[in-house]
Amino acid sequence: MLYNKRVSQESTAELDGGALQSGWDAVKATRQPKKQTRVTWAARTDIGRVRENNEDKFDFYAPDDALTLALRGKLWAIADGMGGHSAGQIASETSLKTLIRSYYNPADGDAQTALAAAIGDANALIFRAAQNMGGKNGMGTTLVAVAVVEDQIIVAHVGDSRVYRFRAGVLSQITTDHSYVEEMVARGAMTREQAETSPQRNMITRSVGVEDSVKPDISVNKAVANDVYLLCSDGLSGFVSDAAIGELLTKSPNPSRLCLDLIDAANDAGGKDNITALVLRVDTVEDVKA
Image (cartoon, rainbow, N blue to C red):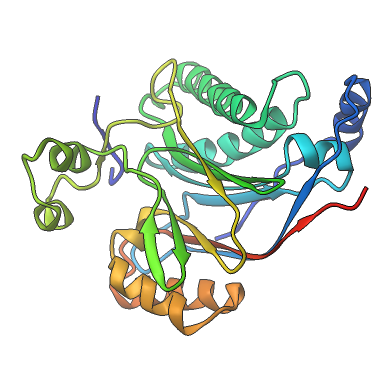
């Protein structure tokens, strides 16, 4: 099924830290982290120059106890809502709140399993809400999340919000858009150049909340010092070329400066959509002393 995404303020999810800690205390586990990845990060979201409201959201959670860090690590995510009027904002914010609450549930196995389950929980909640809210059929959101667990960078995504990695001067897209044009490129029915200018480039084939279930794509990457990860909505990637993004990443190692520059570049290109950029810079990967 295809979904057309073209039909502010950040919001931080409320989270009951005490309840989470009690849950983890009940877990019969003695495992401590063996590796620690230190990152510097920044994020920015912007309404752009055309839209009347911002359906993009970002959120994060950073526990500080050793057991939670060993099993779940730290989590960052962005979501780009759709559905018109307030539906997109509801979907994006709800997806991130549910993602964080569910991911840190100690009953859900390893980090990859927990991340997939958390996205499934977000999907189910939004789908039910849409059925109960008259006129909200089609309410949904993209979602991309990065969990840093010991020396692993775990990436999960649904839709066409992206994660890029900038390593040794080379920019790589490490997510594959769930979109009509991406499927056409994969089949050889459309060139990359045709996809970038196609009037159907905004049609996505997978989203959170539109159907009763969804399967995220999940990948695991080794954390390497000096790598930079960029999470972004298509308000950035759809209007600023990969070459231009790579050039900005080359110019500045500062995540806060990068977010400002990336948002400015998208607005300079017309600002035709909401824009969100979240930058993680891997500073060190260290052994944890016993």
